[in-house]
Image 1 (cartoon, one colour):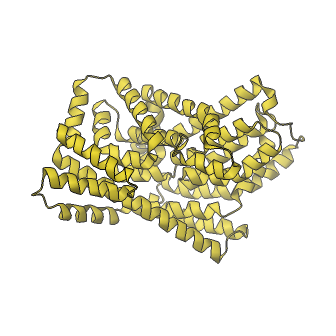
Image 2 (spheres, one colour):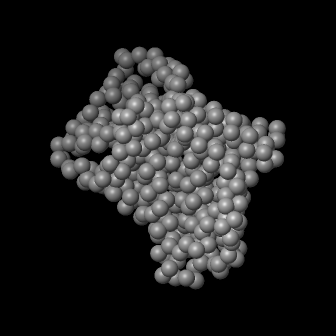
Image 3 (cartoon, helix red, strand yellow):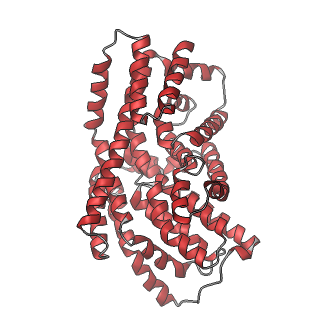
Length: 434
């Protein structure tokens, strides 16, 4: 197995280091490894079967629809509506309007499914407004980097769909599992902002003029479209009215209606949304095919079971194992995009976590959190790149501003490892009641 492991790592490093597409690199690694160690196996037949299995998966159908919904919403004026609707309600909070970024990201995440889309859509209005009102630049940038990652955790989540397909787990249960952790993480961010601004009031701009209760409730009208869309998409799934794929279709229709209502969607930018969604889906689909093929190939070669058996022989406690995986993915996230890291390592890490007593739903949320951490670690953190385009700051400056939120996420991962019920209680209770 030593030769097999070295060959696998060497081929991956060679292909990905040469700039080969991740999906193609995974397929190439699988083909070459099988050719070397199991040459008599019908490799082309296995590859064709994995491509077909990916293409006809009903769970995969929800992926392009949710991505299209995020692309359409990105082209609406939803960010302006979120800011104006939330601003009057944050005036008396410690930290004042700095909380708008977290709240707006939380709401947009519930209709987006994408971390980058959440960061870009919310950031283009909140960053400009808060910096213009005198809020501390490091706090504004850091909170946007951290809160923007909620697009992966709060359902609907693109990463959860991908994980559900690869791990053969219910996407609806994964979506339900992300609700409580997403809300807790958002609340923790807001608590950090409140404490930091209380200790250093100069980081917060001047208070906005007081508003009456009537004006506050009138401001909520601007939140109506996004709240209605959340209710339609999430409520239809959890109410048993629609499957994730059907709910995604409802979301696309709702996002188009919002764009038409705001007069921000026309034939040109709708076509752009479809085009960019097709690009993203093609890239993700290629990676999934490559990951599934490599996973099955390694299974035939016996590598995952060998590594799992070796690590189990070390007799690590469940918490130590999770800590090791957290450090492993944190380091991997510095040199590799998070989704690619997951699909390449899942065949090996999933059996380890299951053997430690955690279930697939819990591990799905764990992986989403470590991917969120990868989103704000240089040099390949996507959220950092998005914010750089919005603000013009250097990647290093943005990464330093995001560091407190990275540490909050790391602490939260350990918290759900100690108290897994934070993740599993809701999906278990709802599935048990059905």
